[in-house]
Image (cartoon, rainbow, N blue to C red; front, side):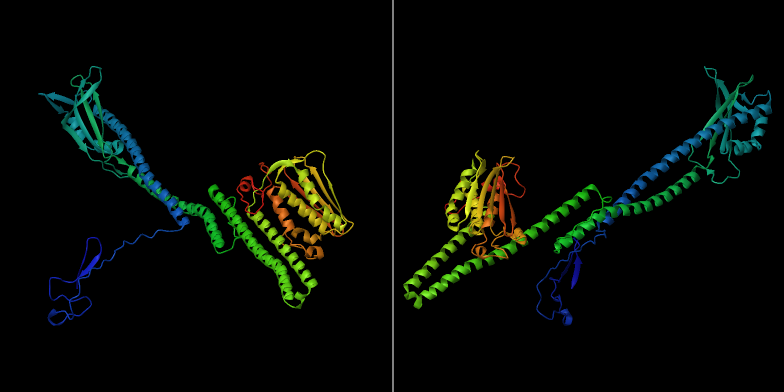
Length: 578
């Protein structure tokens, strides 16, 4: 089986379709190269050839460290050549200026030596239009003078050219160098440490012209390849810069690791806290040190902790609601089972011999009717409480006088109070107490409180209802009695559904345990508060405080808002509608 690699990087195995001796894939060839089996269909397979990705750190701390060090390295890599180049230019300029000074000094010293040697004789003579050098000067130039001056004064390769001179219009003498009168000298001597011939320095020229009675003359000195320490100095500085760069990179690594750790630590703590929350530990919080991390990370940590706290509170509320719903269903089942079981017993008795007794049948039917009334009353209370808790009740808030509502609720219980021998009184102010309220619902609150007071007050006791205005313009309703009172351990639970007290007496046993729950829900919908004070054997006092306008912005925190109340829908028959 032959194979070739396509230009796209994939390998395509194939059979030779043009040959009768092509072996099928995976089968051994027969004699003479014939296929052992039937020819297989040509099959093309492609393999992706993936270029391996370079190994890149995945952690935030490693990437931040590498990025910081990379910035430092790039900065050093860009600035170091610039610094070296600028230093090179500076040193070159300094050496070129020094070379010009040496050229001037060399020309001056050489002119003085020549003038002292020839005396009054001309240095350069004009013979048939050709410049001819004085033989004394020629011998002087061929001696050791130029080597000495080159080594001691010029410190560079030297070229001396003689020529005649002329005077410019400004009175200055200028040399006309004659190339045939030139004397080159190579520097020879011992180099000091760090010095070397430097051909990069631009040659420097300097000339000296002097007047003479016979023939003015001049000399031009050119210095090149001076001995300088520029290269060694640049090498030393370059080495020092490299060492400093390495030290800077090392320090950058340490600083970057420290800074990256400080930045990454809050993220790691956030990740760990979020992992614990995801695993179910809702009490996990991310700890943020005040001196570490940025303001953004601190704000992120605070928001995460706030979110975790709210999530924990929400889960706790859901758990409590779940437990409350479970208890509620259990209590409803228990409350419904009692009258149903009683009616079932009555029916069984009526089906027996007792059904033929008119007196017994009448008693059983009356008891059954009473149990049906209890079922209807219990169902109505459950329906009211369910709608109040779920927000399906729409309050009909009207700015009316509260006195009429309270007086009507008290009058409805006057007959019961007289029958039980209880003194029921109401104290109402002479001036109207006008607040925005739902009259029937508020009447239900007062009725339930008065009903409970009558239920737990014995014959000869007193129940009093009072109404006063609050300094803010609201209403304060007080219902007190001289009944049996409530045990201190039971006070925190009296507004719970179906709670009738652990020390329930006969009066408590006949109730549903829903009256005070309904009262609490209606008061909350009015953005009000309800408080209770009680002493066992001395009676109880319930105080309901209502604001002047529940829709005002100063609603009690946690109470239903005006918008939520206006979006409620009451589906109960006979309920007030806006």
